[in-house]
Image 1: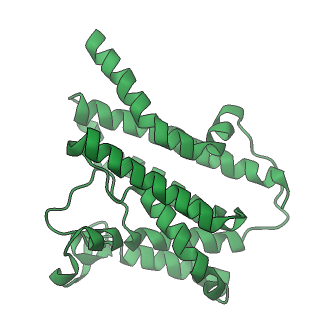
Image 2: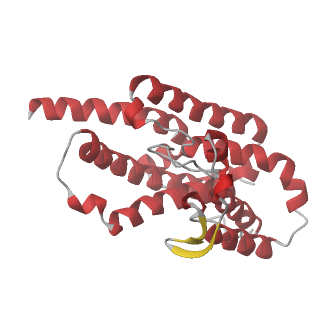
Length: 243
């Protein structure tokens, strides 16, 4: 695959990253600095947040096959997620991040290493459709049932929801708390949908889609993700102190 094929993926990732930075800056203003912004708690803001999550996770699954060291990359991303958990536990326990998006992406990448040879036997269209249907079916598994966005299809046994280990799978206990929670269920299915979509890509599509700053951000997404919250917090602290 030619290097220029990466441009459009980096651009999409950069756009999602810019949206995420704005969303997290808004979150900090509302929940850490007490800004009065009722809209941020509205359904429209929820859609904004979900659009960022879906884009990142689908794109990560799509790009998995482009990597040369999937095992190493998966471990790096998973450990970055563990670093964020440790940092928030030590410095901001009231805003602990456990099973955050980096933990999910790292774990999903690692799971796909042994699963890919088996899943490659499935037709790509059926795999993409089936993965997305499973994602929708398990979307509300964290709440104790199968269903999507409040549509309850079937309750799940309470015994599944035991501890922080089951929370990683998608079954958090009643006292579980995390400010950024992405369990394997349902999100691994969305990651898989992206992986299957890569197999459906049109081979003749080689046009470049590049927006200089945004594309550059997409290339450095992991570094920006790790640094953006401390930078935002420092800037907002200075701003609110000056105000």
